[in-house]
View 1 (tube, rainbow, N blue to C red):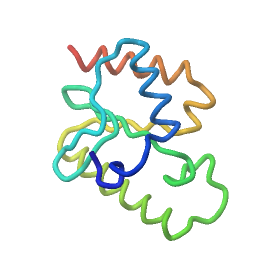
View 2: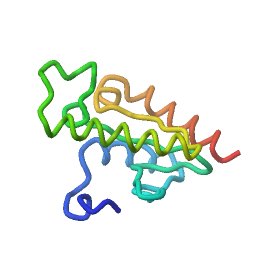
View 3: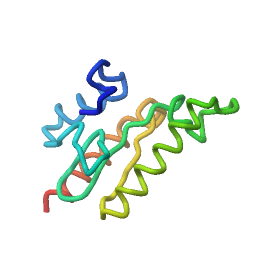
Length: 120
């Protein structure tokens, strides 16, 4: 588990996606370490899901204000993590907060498809 996550409760986005996966009976692993990175959700053999809140991870669709220094740091950290994971052969899929809010059935269908493809 990420050090900062040891002290915080899961976000609303994380809870919603975990519940969606659990209700569908989809097997997954949360907070998995890969090298020095941690991923929000892992599907074997090589798919990771990152759950990004639109504010802190600076969603290009939702973020209308100039980014703060903290947001810029998160964006850079995300880019570095995603580059590492992709170079290690992982498929990286980002689910944005607005995706779940605006199209939960589409997110659910995507998660089911990923789970089915990963288990083959």
